[in-house]
Every structure is written in structure tokens, then in C-alpha cells.
Length: 126
Image (cartoon, rainbow, N blue to C red; front, top):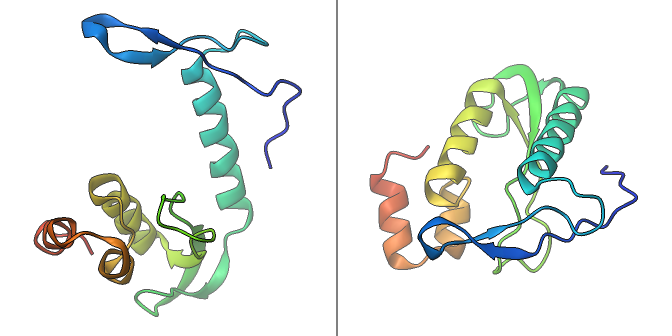
């Protein structure tokens, strides 16, 4: 859970090469990068605090499992499902999301365009 007294509004400014980038928060002055780093730190704490011994939902191996949930995408009607994955499968899912935007084949099959699905399958994602 994220606790903040400021609602963090980051106005967009024009940076190098006429690229829009977020400026410091108008309320408290925190930089966008520092805010994202804090949110990442909190997510990591939650992931480690909720880890437990169980069975990986992807490889079915009995191991310590960690909570994995990709970010919500525009096509999601509800929050994406939480999966409990061993460290190896969690790492693969995180890499797949970073490279393709989809956590696994089912996610890509249900939500990807044809080109995205081909890229997911032949890109070597789990």
C-alpha cells in the first residue's frame, strides 16, 4: 500500500529533443524518478513479505513462490490476475512483460494483436 499526503501531480515539460517528460511534483517537489523508485521499493517489499512455500503456477515445482501481477493494460476490464511463481518463472514473466507487454502465452493470445502475438511467440518469451 502506498501512503502519501501529496497526490503527486507531475506536469509535463519539454526536454531534450522536444520529448515530453514529467517535471517535479507541483505539491511536494519530489522528482518523478524518485517517486517511481519509492513505488518500486514498496512493491518489492510487498513481493518479499508475501512470499511463501508453495507450488509454482507455471512450472508446478514446489518452491518458494512470489506474487506476480503485470500492470493493468487498456484492454483489462479488471485487474490482471495474481500468479504465484517460483523465482525462475517470476524472472521469466517479468522479462516477458518488459519485452512484450504480456506475462505469458495465454495473456498474449487473449489480448495481443496478430503482430504482437507473433513477436511474443518468436521472441523467445516463456
